[in-house]
Image (cartoon, rainbow, N blue to C red; front, top):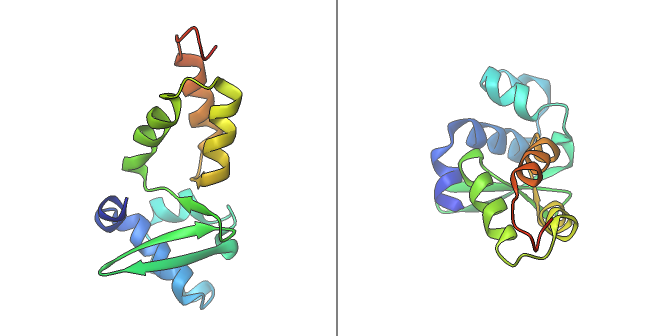
Length: 118
C-alpha cells in the first residue's frame, strides 16, 4: 500500500494538503483530477501517516484512504473468504475509504458469481 501511495501523484498531493491543513490556498497545488476525486468528500476529516518518503491518509482516524491502483486488489482479497456480499461490503467499509467506494462495491457485487457469496 505504501508503494502504491508513493507512486500515485494525485494521492500524494492530497496527502500533502491534508498534512498541511492550511486552507484554500493549498488546493491550488492539487491536480484537477485529485480535486474532483477528493475535495467535498470530507477532506477536513482526513489525517496523514508518514513513512519514509511516502504518506497514506486516513478518514476519521480509522479507515485507510486507498490509492486507486490498490482498490480492486483489496476488494478481491476481501471476497476470498466467501463470507457473503453484505459481510464483505461491511468489512471493506469499516477498514477502507476511497471516492466512489459505494459504486465500486456495487459493481463488484453485481459481478460476483460465487454461490457462497450471492
